[in-house]
Image (spheres, rainbow, N blue to C red):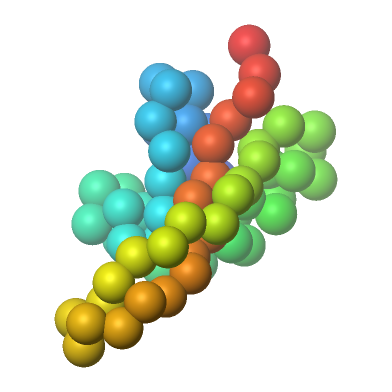
Amino acid sequence: MTQAQRVLDYLKEGKTITTLNAFKELGITRLAARVHELKQDGYDVKKHTISVTNRFDEKCAIAEYYYEGE
């Protein structure tokens, strides 16, 4: 199974994914690259930006991906 397929299976379960989730749960470090591959293959992976607080108590914006399909 490819990393892109792992991401797709995860998203098809109705879950959202961030780079931190991808690393912790799927062992994937380049999530944006895998999402790009999925989009090139025709999958409707969307993203929105969420605000989080980092370990230095600073506000940051990160991408959260989700799947709109099947």
